Amino acid sequence: MPSDTELLEHLYDRFNARDMEAVLATMHLDVMWANGMEGGHVHGHDGVRNYWTRQWAIIDPHVEPANFSAGADGVPGRGRPDQALRYPIVSYCVTSN
Image (cartoon, rainbow, N blue to C red):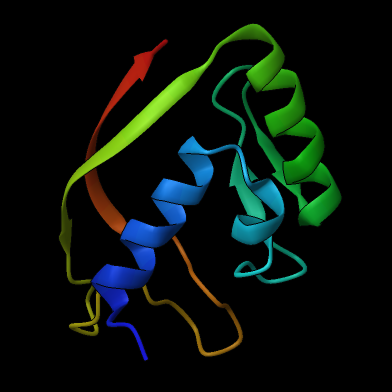
């Protein structure tokens, strides 16, 4: 089983490869995702899928995590038990190809 850091690194790799279904598969069905382009949030897998589709039609971001930090519970990238991943504390660099 991969460590939390290995899992997060894999998810960023899949995001950069535009494998949104692999990334969505790790998210809670009721995920709330920040909409960095238009403000507010999108909800659920369909909301995230539609948002990323719009975003990637406009820009081609490449996200490289610089490091991961543990959350208040001491575990990187973990939130409530009913969520697969919840707002990991990540430092990263975004470039557009």
